[in-house]
Every structure is written in structure tokens, then in C-alpha cells.
Length: 227
Image (cartoon, rainbow, N blue to C red; front, side, top):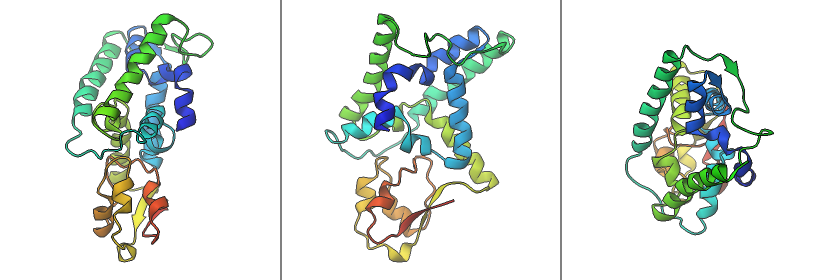
């Protein structure tokens, strides 16, 4: 994730919520369109593993946990209030403009890179502040909880997987091995009640990013990966 974050200035257009709208207006399947589709399809097998292993925004926020490591509680519905009208706008624009007529993963990019002008640099810095400030003010991975427009793609993909029930990467627990040291709950970057999840053997959670922090920290081996 840190490598992904270091490369974020070069490739942040692939995560742009605006670029997909601009591409839709011009009938172009853009890089961000492809990225969001890949996030959804990957969640059918790997859940929100993208968030836990690849996401540049996640890399930035986990680096900031050395500065502000406050657990987050409360609702996470705000990102749905952002995502739902945004997706509705994209669908309506696609219908109004007769669909997509061109495939261009490097749409609005020069040489496949995002920052090629002062405007692009300012846009990047604004996006970076949108990620950094909530993490510093509210707590660990606040952007993921409250603002991320990418998370719903993977949450929906995971729910479809759970409904159908095919094999996928997941967490499993052996509650009898838990010694209630609280390490998993205290260290979870998504502020989940992991110890409680282990106790009731209900490891599936829409906000779980399958980062394996709980697995690494569990000395009694009560949590593990299964596929």
C-alpha cells in the first residue's frame, strides 16, 4: 500500500470520480471506469482486499496512524450518500448520450500519467487533503469509513458473493483459542470489534478489508485466512 501511495501522484486519475463522468459525457470508457469495474469484480473473490493491500488512500491513512491512531465508532452511511447519486448521474448520462463508443484507458492523460499540468497538480493536492484531513481529525481510516466513493463497489461485490456462496478469500475464527487479549480489536485499522466477531464466529463484515492485521497480531492463532 505504501508503494501504491508513493505512485499515487502519477496514477490518481485512475481513481477519479470526475473522470468517469467526463468520459461518459464523451462516450469514452476511461481509466477510472475500468478501475471501478475491476474493484467490483475483484471483490467477488477477494472481498475488500484491494482496500487492505493495494489502495493508495489506505497507504496514506495507515502511515498517518503513527500520528493519529484513534479508533472510529458510529455510522458509515455518508459514503453511500455520495456514491448513490454519483452512480445515478453516470447511468443517466450514459443513457442520454447513447452509451459508450470508445475505449481509452488513458483518457485525459499524457503518456499514461495523471499530473501533466498545474491544474492536475492542484487537483491531486485537493484529493490528498480529502484523504489526509479526516484521518488526522477524526481517526484511523476515516476516509474509508465516511467518504470513499470506491468502497461501495467492493461492498456490493462482496454481498453478491455472500449471497451466491462461491469460494473466496475470507477470515475464519476458532473462538475456543481466543484468550481475549483485545489485540485484534485494538489494532484493526478499520476499528472493527474483531474480538466480538471471533467470539460469535461471525467474521464477515462489510467494512473488513482482509488486511490480516488481526491474523498477524493473534498469538493464539484464533484467526486465519481461508479460501
